[in-house]
Length: 163
Image (cartoon, rainbow, N blue to C red; front, side, top):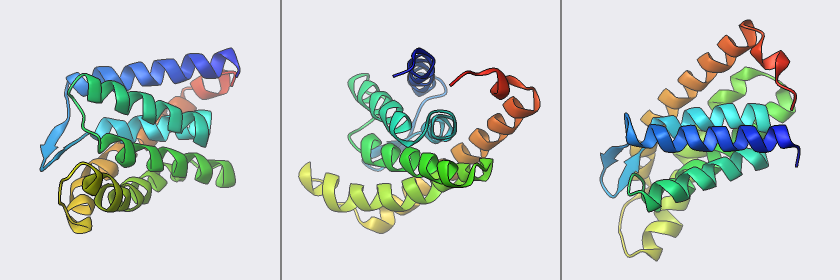
């Protein structure tokens, strides 16, 4: 693991945790949805690739759960989006891969939450509920992440990041 990737992984994890306190998550049923996780997933997926991005999403989710700013649904809600953004960027080299976060979170994450996690913890919520809960923060976070990536590129910051 390159030191620069590890440093960026740590910084993005820290940002995800800090943003979980302010402005914080939004309670929706048994979940605490968090648009900034989607933003972090976009940035991590593009800059670090799918597996490091998944590690960031996992770390942020676990820390949020321990800090009570997230629930067990933060794991299936965050990790698939990070992986999908990373895989899409790897294949296309386009910042539009930021929007792969939406199906990753709102569809794959919702599916895993409804059919795997909710039954495991004794909660009942439908796939439709999770899709409705996860889509708005995924869209908002994807847009913010895309804007940040474009701004970093225009400023020449991305070109100077040795990953």
